[in-house]
Image 1 (tube, helix red, strand yellow):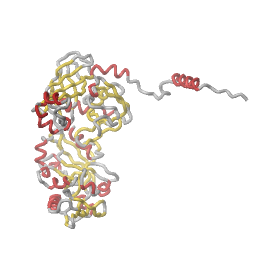
Image 2: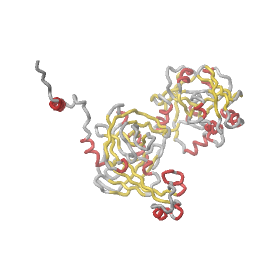
Image 3: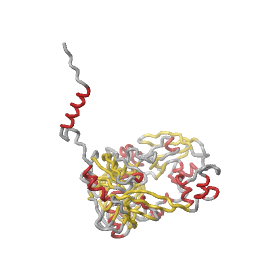
Image 4: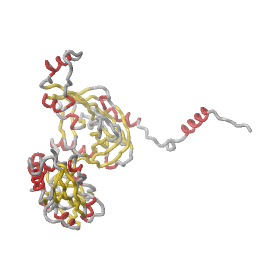
Length: 479
């Protein structure tokens, strides 16, 4: 019997021809980014800034510190010329920075990030045709990380703005920017999640993507496949300073609301409810009769606030705001912040197992220093300072929680756990601290007094109420 053997090269050629003959849909329907990039690149700009860093500021930042070098080494003379005799840092020096942005009007308005231009002495905007303009900061908003610039030019290319609310998780998106100064670099990926809250940002529900974003991309546009800007690339999650697969963009409709306020009134105002909130844990959800953890638990109502005037109480769970569901506590601040000042809002709450709707007239968010004065625990050497040394924030036990857990008077509920002894002891958010070192805890302030009276570096028993049962944990006090 004869056996015919096909050449492997012939087989490979046959498969290649077959693949090329298939329609686009059969090849996986991969997107073609070329038309999008060609149409929109001219409106994306490179932003370079220069700012003056003082000696004191430089000493606070490791990247500005000067390494010890031998005086007779090859770099000794260069260091003496720049830093003076003894290698000391000068009183001030110039440091450059790079970012991206995009043009929104033909007469030269440019949008970028606040952190790209903050504190800059000089801002230069370079277009794709290599023209360079000096830019003026029209206004900047640190809470949203949005800045508006103006350059003196006419008939400039602009970008079409879309709506991030129409984005779907898994949808293709594309970024154009200047990572590490490489102008008009293009990267693509998908939407990984929407409405992400970051620890340092309370008012932005970020778009999370896996688009490769690096230093220099900040302020650049994020496009959908229709060539519409749906976000402003703002932050990356990284342990190395470079891209690690997690990028975050500001939703474009939120950014443009900020831009409009900057253009019309010169500053940004936000709605304010006047409550301190915490997450509803699984145990808390069970105690409140909720089928799943949802909403924002009111841990404190600030004095002279819209919440106090409307009758909100500690222990209320805010379920929705103006018919917008509050799935977790971090979702509430952006919703309230975008509400117009002076407008009434319908707030659905859970209180004593019943759903109620309250009408709240939203006020303007006060400055940070005024908010600090309104918050009693912001006092120096207050009870929360001692708790925070242990890696947790404490609040009074809400009446609703006390009744649900059948607790006597006193105690302190754990509102947040960070790195520190509390986490090492496996204390969790939502735990109610009842006793420490066999002494009953009457309040967060009393807890601080008890801890301060104990010897440093001691290991003490702590009785906590978790769910429906008490449990002892061993807490080591800091030295």
